[in-house]
Image 1 (cartoon, each protein chain N blue to C red):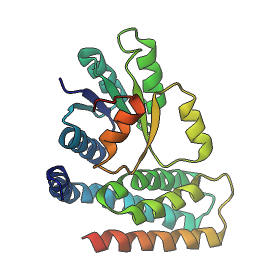
Image 2 (tube, one colour):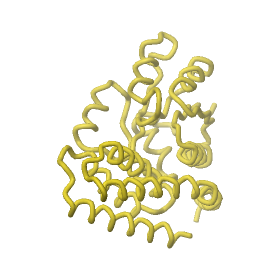
Image 3 (cartoon, one colour):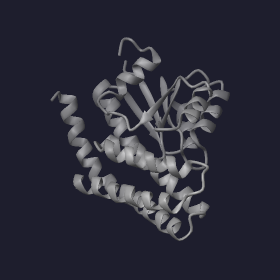
Image 4 (cartoon, rainbow over the protein chains, first blue to last red):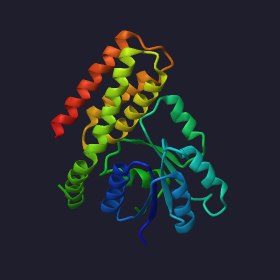
Length: 126
Length: 109
């Protein structure tokens, strides 16, 4: 059964390219949300195997969305990978300290993104 | 090229065509921020808007095969997010980076 990934990002182009990458390279099932609030709803409905979460989004940013997901018993155990444009070292540490499964950086290579996610999550059979 | 690589390359070319207008809007936001900062280097709103546009461009351009564009955007973001007041030289440098970014995007078409 393919992995199910939820991508939460307010940028259409990033969502589309990430979904293209994960579906084409790894054969995973991908669903998408364009905001933190919509992402939480989809996470509750679908209980994905992992969530790829953008950091900088309007209204509810990535760290706030992560805290909400972590506070909900239905989604607290879903691994979350923060996806952010290149940041300064202090921000990188701040994101890592949130307790997310991993922090990954844009721009990503569409051909290697799935492998990097699988590696970060210890999905050795992918 | 593997099947997956060929599929992704073809789809990326399509996505570039649909994404290009929004990318150019972000570049226009950078130009507007630069113009405002040229008039007033202490314009905090312009600095914030320029930083946000640079951050978004830093994340997206490399995905479409423009790593140099991402690097240029990141260096601009780094300047704009630093706590230091902008000097006239900083603003001139910013304008040069934006021109270089224009050229990188124009080359891709």
